[in-house]
Length: 410
Image (cartoon, rainbow, N blue to C red):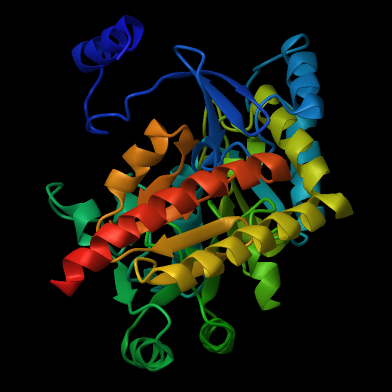
């Protein structure tokens, strides 16, 4: 370990909350395309993209130009005033998702908080008593009290006392259980759903399950909220994952890749719903400022290009093909799932040690749900860099597989 890195680790522990535990022992100081460079100028292949945030990779020319131009003009004024960048970004979301109105915030958690508030206010205003929201086991919607309460994972709740009431948890991908809950529960204002559960382990919603959810909600006047914080902005090969299911939610939440690394979140909803958040009912100081929206515009313009989605599909096909071949060589890979460039590799044991080993071999990946390796490169990743990264990952998995198989056989 270099002296520079040792000093950073020491100061991190001295001055920062340790809510992330021991951070991975590297500090990235520069990025270029799908490569990252650490404190000692060592080069890594980035197959994480900041947890699906750096959607255009690092130092993407048109993105960098847009940010520099905006910094030279104005970064922040206030939501008291008209904001041309906010208007243009909202227009682009309407064009790529569905016609509606957008509320900009600062994160995915805030976008989901806004969606919860909107759904409740609509339910209580229009139906007088409807305030409950159905969410699903394995979900993750954020860490503030409302979004944490919407998240159906006890490990996220532990130690924080009473949750916000009004959330009903349903089994994911279980049509029968969902029908029963909707039949027997009262005062349901909305259903909130991830079509691919990112933090839950890259669990993909079944087409017929989603159709059932939407049919029941539409028949009963229940709002539908699709959380696309991780799946949106071209991540799955289409602009938004709900487009793979041929559905249109009432409310859509976005963040992560929306501004390519500049903090932003957004709630986009059908136009009639904007009446339920009138003046004074919600707000944010920083949400949708000039810089964040300029970044979002640059990203949204890129994902509208035909060659953009074609490249995502090409890169996705390459990864899935490589992983299928790896799976044929070892029983260490239990399952491969996902869509586009949001891919999970299920292992028979915890995956954090593989993340550490990958880092030691100059590859950046991630583990979620304990035993699922998560691959989420930038949507513009160069195929040479992708091949390089997959070569490293294959060697690690096959080596681990040999040890696992020998141990299992004893």
